[in-house]
View 1 (cartoon, rainbow, N blue to C red):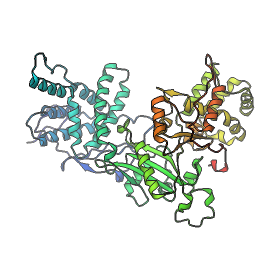
View 2: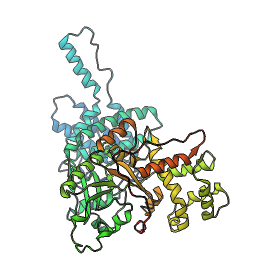
View 3: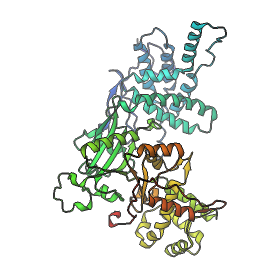
View 4: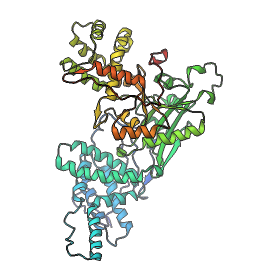
Length: 555
């Protein structure tokens, strides 16, 4: 039996529907070459290729054009749902699900949003199914409760469960949730659409949380001997410090480096979280050593074992990049568990390792700083001392304090200002002070406004040290004026620190950071506000060395 091609006026959906053209389902984002694509298939006649996801983009991907297959996708979905709780073979249901996945992957951006809205509404909970239980006896009450339980579970929950059984189905659902989150963003102004889409997202997120529980994830170490397609994905997914070339990648998985990933049996060729580590003998205050040096530290100049790691120099692990690669797993905690697993791996490899710390970016600092400077320009807040204003006016060659802010906003869009030594020195004290204020005082729902800070503090880390001019890459300067943070992990205190932060929103600080914050609280004066102080640092946290700018801080 030959069916009318899908998308044409004569096409009808049904259990005998067949797709005759085996078009590979490839979601092209331009991030990876075909070499790195994993190959899975729903059936021998219609291959299904789960799409790789590039490192998180700063803006949504460009919309794709309409395909005309939206009705075919809806029909295939409803064909499958009509067989729910029937005596139909699961093979027939699987075939409908394959068709639906096949059509969905070919839909344009707007068509996908329409399909997700259709699924969220047409397959929502049926509130009219449950009957009256007045006068019900024990057996009837149990049957009523079972009926209630089934009716409260929306049909799209069943749809997701069926798709997960297909080869490549879990990856399909991860990608579908990425589309769902994008649709939620575009429909934010529509209250009705937001409600049904959030319900759909909640169901899918809860299922993904079960399927991606830590017990089902595997930790893998990536080396230069790892498969080429995995290395390429590690390179493409790097969102914190972009990989420049293959030589750079080889260095990042070579001597005095470690790279670990979380993988899942349903997505064996897809790194879910990627963690890069630098092995050294001190807590790093600059990305220069990490990205350029193949040595553990400058003290190794006399060490002639260039082709081998010397364990005598390794007592510190610096987590300098952690990337979640799948936007569809947003809101599902994976990164913190990977860090904990990796710590055990490193302790087993290096029994003398005693220090664990991150060297973390501050992605939202400059954006926040621009907002503060706009308030200062309007006279709503004071962020610079009088002596600092005078020095900045001289460096920037402006005549009024108000002009300082216009010049700085413009300078911070470029990287050239770091070449002006006098300006860099004049900015160090106020920008470090304001950065401490941003990290500790500025909150969102009671927790740190900065997402990276919130991640490490939830894991039980101490906000240990703020480093001036630590990342002089274009991205580092654009995001945080080159400032980076060490979040230090004291293994025997992580649990109590995490509980303190989550339960009372208290941030554990070192003495040096506490000094910066209290200085900021006395200098950053808002109209109608009073200065205050921050909690004392953890009693067992030793005092870190003074923050200094060294030659190693210059790239």
